[in-house]
Amino acid sequence: MHLGELIKQKSYEQIVYEIRRHPITFIPIAFLFLVLLLVPVILYALISRIFPELLMGPRSYPLLVLLVSAYTLTMYLLFYVRFIDYYLDLWIVTNDRIIDIEQHNLFARSITELDLFRIQDVTVEMHGMFATLFNYADVSVKTASSNTHIVFYAVAHPNKIREDLIKLSEEDRKYHQRDEAM
Image 1 (tube, rainbow, N blue to C red):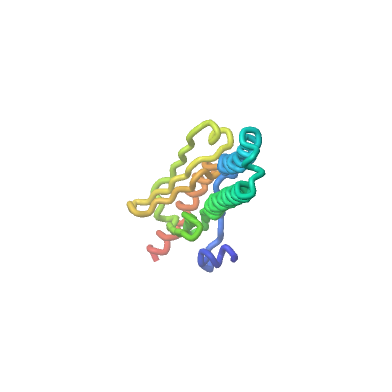
Image 2 (cartoon, rainbow, N blue to C red; image 1 turned 90 degrees about the vertical axis):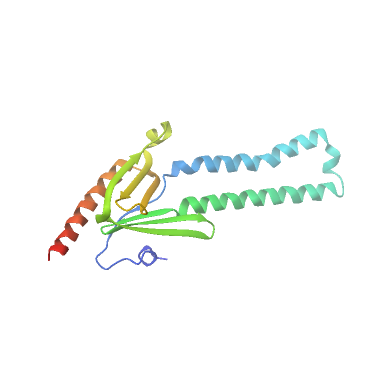
């Protein structure tokens, strides 16, 4: 599906940014997945030394194969769900608005829109050594309304995004003030 169809792009609207989380933030999840996939291998090595008869039994061996297969399939499924959550979280900044597309679960998604001229404050929150080294942070966009608040989680080049959002907001505010004056 084309991105313009997903967000129902207006005729005068142009996409400025398509923002996703920084790839470095997915590395701990991938590392954990690899470690969890090694658990059956380690257990096999331990069982073959301590209880070798379990691996040769007519009932125990197929049961162990079934358990390891179910465990591995579950790990792949959990990794897939986490990857989908990571990959499908998307923030789209246009010259008119911000669209926040958040994937909550495999079958749950929320889409929030915010007009640029309503932006009151844009804040960057960078926490930790890795965030500083790899230059990623949370960018918080606030409005005067208490119910609209968008956070770009762990995005690369947060200060540039903050500056550009402020510029786009000022340009959009001038455009809307000119329309109101006419």
